[in-house]
Structure formats: C-alpha cells, structure tokens
Image 1: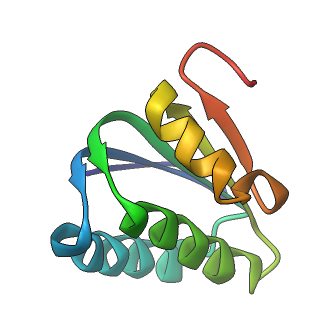
Image 2: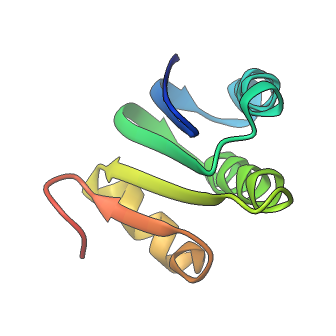
Amino acid sequence: MEFITSGKSMTVYLSGEIDHHTAANIRKLIDTETDKLLPHVLVLDFSAVTFMDSSGVGLVMGRYRNVSAHGGRLEVVNLPPWCYKIMRMSGLEKIARIQMTGGTR
C-alpha cells in the first residue's frame, strides 16, 4: 500500500489480494493514516488489486463510515472490471463514487 496526500485529500494505492487474511491489516493501516489527516476526500485506488472477496466490500464500507463521520467523502477508482461488478452488485455506488479502470460506468 502507498499513501499520497495532497491538502485534505488522501489516495491509498492498494495492491495484491484483499481477502479475509489481509483486510484487517489494510483497515488498520488506512484508519491510522485517515485518523491523522481527517481527509475531505479519501480515494481508494484498486488498479493493482489482483484478487478481492467480500472482505474488500467490507473494507470499503468501513472506510466510508470512518471518513463520512467527519464530513468527508469516499471514491473508489481504477477498479478492474471483475472488481467493479462486485462493488456494483453490493450497492456501493449508493454511498461512494466508484470508477472502473478506464472511466466511470
């Protein structure tokens, strides 16, 4: 994972697999950084994610709750097509902007 901040925006570049075994550590790292900055916009970039199960949906929903608690918003970008489909099926587009690799669908 890589964190890039610009003003009150934070982008988290996720990579590898997001599953039951990795999600807890990812959550902890993101929450530690967002608690420091309290970003107005939190962007989760999925361009380098190679696998995701339902733990990834939970990861996104929890980060939405955290960032919205202080008035921020969440964007989930560069989702591979298979991952975008999972996010849409879960209804995440109702709470966050989601964007497939190559543009919004």
